[in-house]
Amino acid sequence: MTYRVEKAKINDAAQIHRLINHFADKGEMLARPLSEIYENIRDYFVVRQNEQVMACAALHINWEDLAEIKSLVVSEESQKHGLGDKLIAACLKEAERLGIATVFCLTYRPAFFEKCGFSLVDRSELPHKVWGECYRCPQFPNCDEVALVCHLEVKV
Ligand SMILES: CC(C)(COP(=O)(O)OP(=O)(O)OC[C@H]1O[C@@H](n2cnc3c(N)ncnc32)[C@H](O)[C@@H]1OP(=O)(O)O)[C@@H](O)C(=O)NCCC(=O)NCCS
Image (cartoon, rainbow, N blue to C red):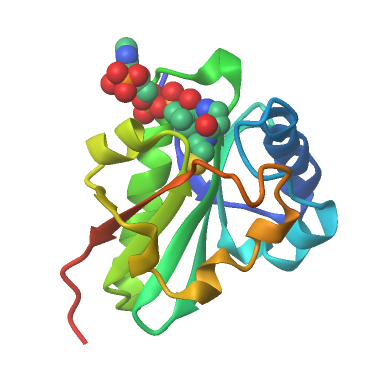
């Protein structure tokens, strides 16, 4: 079966919300309110099967040269089929199209992102602004998420 990564539609928001919060409840990522998913629905990519959202990821723009991959999740039944990798590739392609030179992520799964072309960086190398969501996290301030970046060849 070939899976297609597509831009999310407004009707996907409730399923994206359930998927993210399922893993957030297990402490694997930051929870997101449904309102935030609606407000940022244009950031999201999804993989659907029979109208069901099996996986999603968001590319959120921070600044002219910086964007973040957020809320990467693949449902348990759909993992290890390359969907995570495809979603990251879609986010990076969009960043490249927009002319954004650096994409970063904050994650508990650094090895996965390293396989996708990201490199570990010291958290202090990222602007303070990107940590703005941390106060909402149950792990704050003792979080062990790590930062990784991917530099893109962009034409400006
Ligand atoms: C991290 C996560 C997004 C990865 O998604 P995924 O779709 O399983 O990712 P992929 O399938 O692209 O790669 C996962 C593994 O499957 C392997 N794989 C990919 N396609 C495969 C295939 N057809 N057959 C066998 N293995 C395959 C990959 O090589 C990779 O191996 P690894 O575990 O040694 O790294 C997923 O595990 C997840 O949603 N976890 C919970 C939430 C989370 O932690 N999100 C990240 C927060 S930022």
